Length: 115
Picture 1 (tube, rainbow, N blue to C red):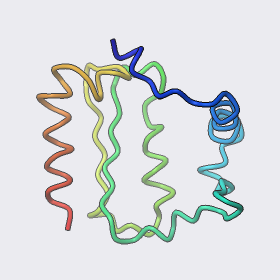
Picture 2 (picture 1 turned 45 degrees about the horizontal axis):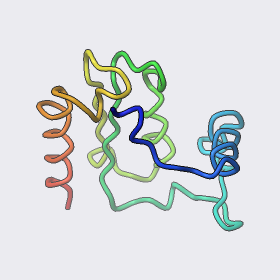
Picture 3 (picture 1 turned 90 degrees about the horizontal axis):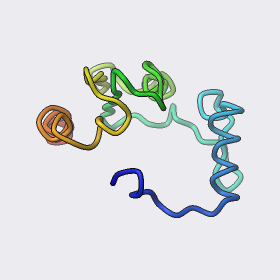
């Protein structure tokens, strides 16, 4: 069922996103823009960041979510946390028993602990 639970996107937007993010790597290069302005992730200073990935993810390879940790360079280390969920693929990170019993409590607690 989760394969059918996707948002309808205009083809142009989808193709542009694939090009900018996955082919040209504009996000980690600091070249991604919004309304003509470069996005500056070093401006992020006062939030907490939790990145999560699945051990068997066949869509986002291991380590890919860690790029968010790197580009948010001005977040203090105690505000960054990374979790690799053993035994799940792409959808298991946010769907199913392991999500409900292991990942969701981690996400919930991370949000509650953020000040």
